[in-house]
Image (cartoon, rainbow, N blue to C red; front, top):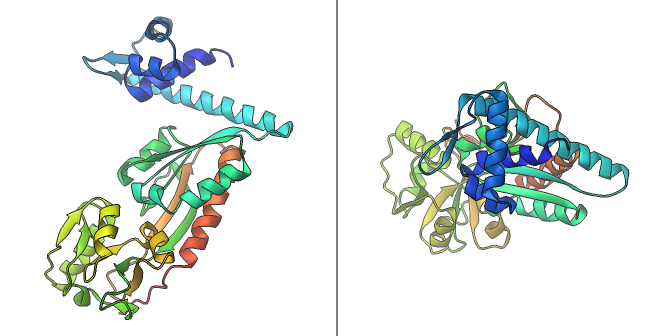
Length: 309
């Protein structure tokens, strides 16, 4: 690729906010990267980075250049993958951003199957807070994003959308375990282990309790889904979760899902998003299809919401 080395240098320096870190990742001398950046800045007549005491920050000109750089690099990777496919060789790379909860469980079967079927392909999964996922897709840092309740954006395209219920999660020995469907008023009688305020499920729950005038006080609040599941494994504790975060434990019989009948608790939309403009390469399309099949199968096994009005 023409000037490919310079483009890689720029991309890594921008991603890592440091020439030294970029050099360490690329296994080259820091001076080599610095020379390339300085040469390009002279050629363009504008600084690309603001040199701060501890990091680099892109200037306005740098933002424009790095968007072009990433588009060019992705175009080259797409071309290389397509040329290899013509030779019958599986290779390429796909990157995605998703939430910590989805990365810890629901997407693992899809990633594993995909790698088994396409052994020459590299998959990058970034676990981010939900609010950062659309920007990671828009900036070109990743090919696709997977998250819940994403706000509409004309620059993003929803490739897959699935409705996922919100459920109460208890251990098999919990007094409510045989009830199948419960209400918010039923669960406040038990010690609650809940996600922290600011997390999607907790915000939904908080609004619903407020609308019904129900006072509640969680025993534990945490942003760790793993801690929530560990604590709920001991009755009579319970939680309210997105079931995709605990589907592995539910399938093993370690946890039980109960429907919530309150009208304020609506299913969440689980979406796979890509940039609106520009074609998605065939490797990313293959991966999206694998995710769609796997996630649809998992959602189909979840409790069917029975909402009461």
